[in-house]
Image 1 (cartoon, rainbow, N blue to C red):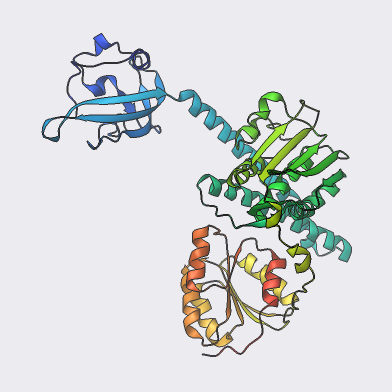
Image 2: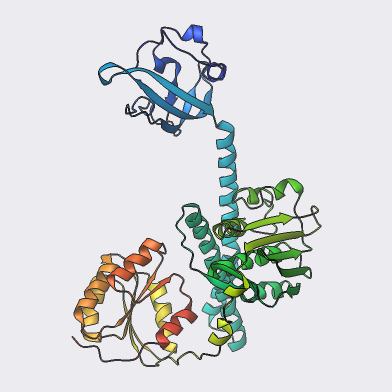
Amino acid sequence: MLGLLNKAYVNYQGQCLTGWSQEDAKGLRIEQIFDVAQPDGSGAEDDGPNQTEFSGTPSRAIRVLRARDGVQHMIEMRRSDIPGKEGRASGSVIVFHDVSERMRNADRRKDEFLAMLAHELRNPLAPVSAAAELLALGKLEAGPAKKASQVIIRQVKHMTALVDDLLDVSRVSRGQITLDMAPIDMKLVVNAAIEQVQPLIESRQHTLTITLAPPKAYVNGDEKRLIQVVANLLNNAAKYTSPGGTIGVEMSATAGDVCIVVMDNGIGIDPATQKVVFELFEQVRVTSDRTMGGLGIGLALVRSLINLHKGSVTCHSDGLGRGSRFIACLPSLPPDEAIPDRRSVERLVELPVANPDLSILVVDDNIDAAEMLQFFLSTMGHQVSLAHTASQASEMVKSLTPDVCILDIGLPDGSGYDLATNIRKMFSVQPTLIALTGFGTMRDRDLATEVGFDHYFVKPADLDELSKVLATVNSRDVRH
């Protein structure tokens, strides 16, 4: 603990914040004038500022500073001890500044964000719930039943995309996204993005105009992520343009850049908001009436992904009610690095027809989820068995000799990773192992690959993609 402040210097801002003048502070111990606590209020005087190694590296923390008059301030504090004789501190330097307003704004934006997130999740849950209740009555004819099912599928896909965007924003901010870079024609990217957003555009009866020139404009990029960028810009335009409005997509290419412009005649953006429209939380504040929905996640992700591609994205609007323009530009590739239109070739390849008689073991402790997946797979003609624990699955797999095992990772009595390892040890002719889980980080995926999973799906699984995987599996006699 430091001694008396006989030789102390406190600058003017420090005196204002603590309430102690330099003259009044003389002879006091440091904790008497620098009264700090954890932001949650736990402990009157925590040892955060008084426990720094004499390494010369300042500690850094957010603390509550109680001034002489009792007023509390949120401060960001850095503290370094001044080494003295025999390793003892001869003094200390404390630098702090008031971040109360910044913290209040951050808390407010987060509260608004959570409120909007709840709103965005409840929106699709309402039609899902209603459609499920109608189907449960068992009185719908084939046409209405199919329509109710389509409502559920569409809204679940919307919720899945929302969660994926949230996770992607987090991954980008932490530097956890690895881009799969390759030369790609941006015309194909735009077409794929339009295909994704087409149902929303059609449901809102928008007129979509497309101008894509020149015929080919190549960039070095991650195809999946660039489709996500353009789709998010289109989705944003559709969401904030009234039904019957107009949306336009234009592509241009110069010697240095390929630019995509997405424009609309929607609600527009006021000048002040244009400066922060790509911020995750600021976007919420300007749409807090929630009449149009939207979290700002899509635009925040657009900027992050474009930055990872060494590009730029900007927005412009003449004001509220006067539409918006978003311009995303990427460095172009030289013409001599052009590649064939591989996607047009890929579309000529027919997918294999699924074997209708696979033996499949589904392991999931969520009984409803397991039974719905069993029902879906059974309608495809497969033989499907269910287990809800790892131990139950281990016993069943011995007699079933399945062609495919679809395993949840988080099981009540063990891990799906351990179960997969055990199954691999049981057979000489290996079954296909598919992970179906709510865990979707790269670490989870890498671990699944290490223990022997052949495929990895994050809940809720895209059943079309799952069907394509099953179509590649041949029924086989799996023996011990």
